[in-house]
Amino acid sequence: ITPAIRTYLDMNRDKLKNTAYIITSGSTPAEKIIPLCEELTGKKPVAYAGFVAKDLRNEKLYREKLAKFIEDLKK
Image (cartoon, rainbow, N blue to C red; front, side, top):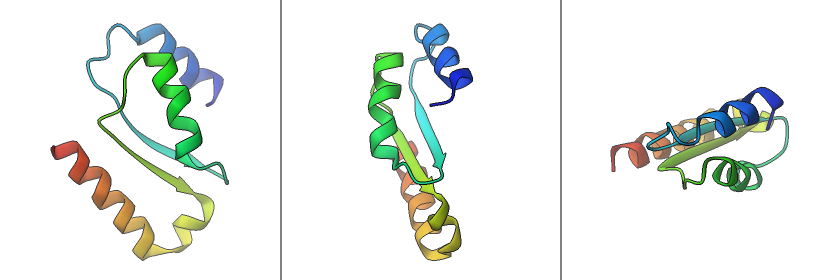
């Protein structure tokens, strides 16, 4: 997590009712980043989608991940 995002989550943890994340990374999977977000906010996200660089070259995978994220938000 970049320092700016880490600081924002830490400083606003009490103001956030729910969280949802779109995580982009060169190669680190979202599953490794989400626990850090949960720790900073004290909240489990209602939805998240993780995209590593190679995902952006695979349109089908990109669309599937984005569709799942949107569906999870609707729940």
